[in-house]
Image (cartoon, rainbow, N blue to C red; front, side, top):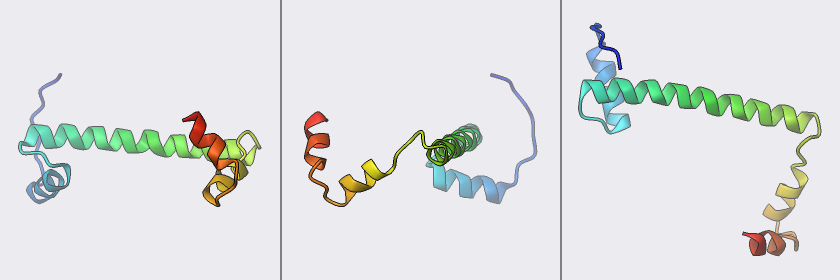
Length: 80
């Protein structure tokens, strides 16, 4: 872990701490950095999924049919 001295926006830091449930500046900054990285990873995963659907690699009709009460839903529940 590196040590860095930086100027912080106190209001933004306080708001971030409230949202993240952190109590120290260090916790808040580290949690915010992790949150940004996690959001980017999730966004990239969603984009990959969209591409897979567009290319026919994933068939959403099987998911949609279980949400609409398709009888095969019981098969999915049994497998879980």
